[in-house]
Image 1 (tube, rainbow, N blue to C red):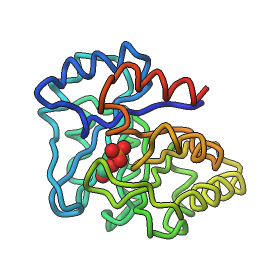
Image 2 (image 1 turned 90 degrees about the horizontal axis):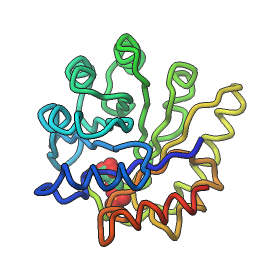
Image 3 (image 1 turned 90 degrees about the vertical axis):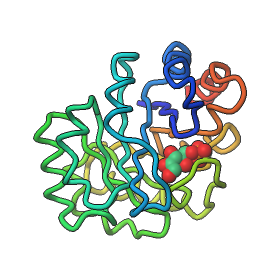
Image 4 (image 1 turned 120 degrees about the vertical axis):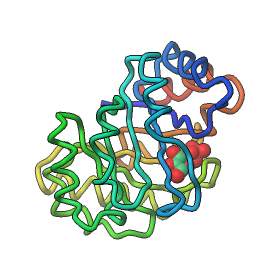
Length: 216
Ligand SMILES: O=C(CO)[C@H](O)[C@H](O)COP(=O)(O)O
C-alpha cells in the first residue's frame, strides 16, 4: 500500500483548516504532523491544541511525528488528541521498547524514526513491534531542505532487513521528497511518502494529484 502524507509544517498556518480540506479532497491518505520541541531538533512547531483543533476537519489518518526528547511523557496526550500513528525517534528515547509499548496500549499504530546518519541496527530488534519505520532523508527540524542522497541506499537496506525478518513493516521517507525523486525512493522500497514544501508550494490540490499519479 502506497500512501501520501503531506507535512503540514509547510502549510499556510493562517489558513490551516482550508489547506487540510484541500489535501483531503485531493486524495492525500495521511496528514503528517511534525511536533518539535526545540531540544531534540532546533525548531519548535506545535502540539496538542493544534491536533485537537484540526481533528474534526478530516477523517484522514493523523500521522504524528514526534521530534521531541523522551516522547514517552506525552504519548497519552497525543493519542487523546486524535493521533492514529505515533512515531518516535530512536535517538530520543532512553527506553525505546517501553515507549513503543505505551503507544500500542492506545490501540494505535507505532512508528520508529531514524535520523539520516543513525545506523539501521538501531531498529533491528524493535522491528517486529512497530508498524512503520520513518527514515529521515534530511536532518530533522525544518522543511524545504534537500534530500540526502545516501539515504536511498539506507531505504534499500531497511527493506532487506524487513524482508529478512519476514515482516511487512511500512517504510516512510521524510525530507526533501518531490516529484523528481519520489519514484526513486519508492523503487528503493519506501511506501509512505512525506512531502511538505513540494505539496504546499503553489497549487496544493494539483501537487497532491501529481504525487498520487506518480505513486500509482
Ligand atoms: O520532518 C520534517 C522536518 O523535520 C518535515 O516533515 C520534512 O522536512 C518535510 O518537509 P519537506 O518535504 O519540505 O522537506
